[in-house]
Figure 1 (cartoon, rainbow, N blue to C red):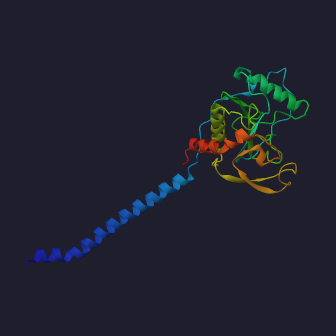
Figure 2 (figure 1 turned 180 degrees about the vertical axis):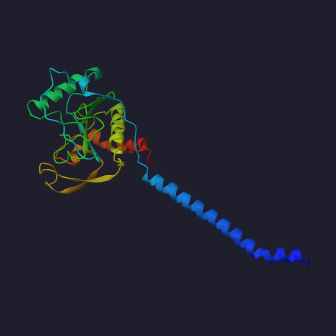
Figure 3 (figure 1 turned 180 degrees about the horizontal axis):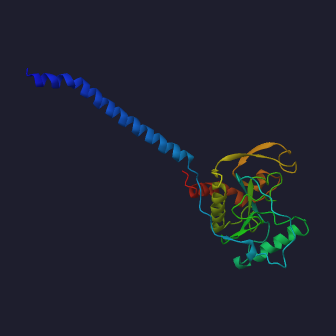
Length: 250
């Protein structure tokens, strides 16, 4: 056999080893890259776009404004409570600002609250209104759910939604969009359950008790009430799914 051929044959094991090492290195690189992509996907927050919101300045004029202390804030929002306002349903949506102003007057007047309790209100046409003062995109402490106002947002549906009452899809879609945005700031899945600590014993849980509640809950989950009404309560699972989709979750 010619010397050149012998040399080439002698090199075959070494070449095979180098090729194997190259293939192995390529596989490791692909595996590391895939793991990195998965880690980034897991860490990426599921945020949703902020829906259009009418500022409180458009429903609360200076003559109606109640003197109040500065807003209070929490560190984040990890849950949303859905309410209904227990008011008539047959309103014209153009009258929603007047209705909200009436609710504000009742809560700051006869109830002697420092502001309207709900962080947001939604009318039957799907228009969202800023409620409590302090900033729409900030974790403002509300006054909407006994014991669980901290780290939560209160969304009130304008109307009464007891059993048998039709709930407009425009309203539920707006609630879902608002919940998706607010919960997305803390990367909270609207379908999840979260831990909240009761701040007073007027709720369903004694003060200091840590309860596990839906991240998107009806008022009755934290307080002894029928709010937000049987009809709206029945739609909460659908609202949760819509909110999760808006956050880009599967």
